[in-house]
Length: 238
View 1 (cartoon, rainbow, N blue to C red):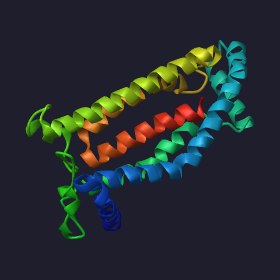
View 2 (view 1 turned 90 degrees about the vertical axis):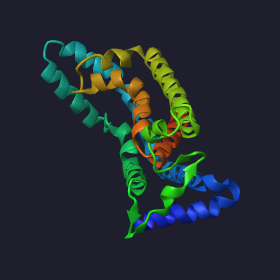
View 3 (view 1 turned 180 degrees about the vertical axis):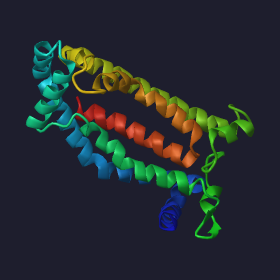
View 4 (view 1 turned 135 degrees about the horizontal axis):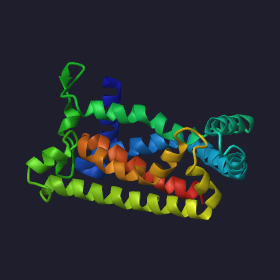
């Protein structure tokens, strides 16, 4: 933890001439971009996996017709088909899973008042009027939703909502353009996949809750990563 704190502090010092008091927030954005660059090969692999899964949809639809009266046999047949074609139905989850350690590092870093027995100086840094270690509840108690700190969160919420709406529309367009995949997603082909396909378009909206309850530094990571992901997916899945 102390090594990571030193990394963020040094990066903030380097960015201070450009960003002044918000240098630590800029460092978090830059750190997030670095993590996303490291994860990008997994994102590209997930995009290739998505294309491969789409190519399997006609075969899955045929299996559904063949085993319509035997859901258990249908599930086994679809799992066997994925294994035969070397396509993982959960490959798209890997980019998100590999980012979790970076998120939790930031969460714990800005949730602790001490690091290595010393005061956590990073808690004194701010994003404009909002301390990076505070949460939305702190902003509400210090000036309200339209106070100086509250306005910082309002901007983040609006950005997350815009990204979520963009992802929702894109997911709906993809399903509309591939009616076979939409029909398969509504069936019990793979355990849990139908429910997951229906929930996925709404997942970005859950980010609003995350931004509201975690320290602002971790929220900034989430907002930056979510925005990056939306742009990346739009490019990879076009």
